[in-house]
Structures are given as structure tokens and as C-alpha cells.
Image (cartoon, rainbow, N blue to C red; front, side, top):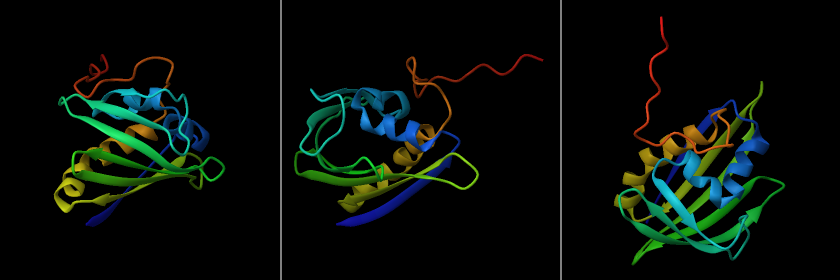
Length: 148
């Protein structure tokens, strides 16, 4: 069993970042590896279950284990067959404005090591200032360069 931590900071307000976590329907807008989430819950809460579908065709089941809305922290367990990851997330305000987010992921060493760069990419998008009013950019989307 291995544990690794990934942290990112950005200009999005802590309450905005928390809402992006708290509503599973929004996960695919900031997590480039998530295609969709199936769950009956509109918001994370202990005991909420569902499935996450990736662009690579992988489907994983999840169970939310613990949520502290006031402190903006939560833990969930994600599994694919015998492979299980436990992920603890937290959102904090940073001095000068914006937010920080930290993920502590525990599981089999090879899976944790492979997931870390994907998680770092997703967390950077999570704290970005973009709007959630429409679908976010997909992982293959690149904005055109500004015109001269």
C-alpha cells in the first residue's frame, strides 16, 4: 500500500471549488479523465455510490465515505476489481485570494504512481477560474492562439 499527496492552488474561490467537488454531475467539466458519472445523488454525502466512466473505457465504482461540508473535505473509495484507491480531498482558502486543493491518495503503488500526474492535471483545472455554465474543455481541446 502506498500513499501520495498532490496539491494545486488557483484563482477560483474556495466555495466554487467545493461545489465542483460536491456535485458529481460537474466532475467531468474539470477532470479531463472523466467522461461521465452515474449516481442518483445530486451531491456527495456519506454512503453515496455510483460509477465513473473514463475516456479510456474504464468504469470504476465509487462510494463516498465521509464528507465535511463546513471544512470542505471529503473521502471516497474507488474500485476496479481487486484494485481499490482511497482518496481524501480538501479545499482551503489561500492568502491573497483563490483556493488550494489537496488530494491524498492511497492504494497499490503502481496505481497510485500512475494516477498522480492525472490527478495533478485535474486539480489544476479544478482551481481554475473558468465558468461551469457549460461543458468545460475536453482534454484534447486547445484554444486557438490569440490573433495578432
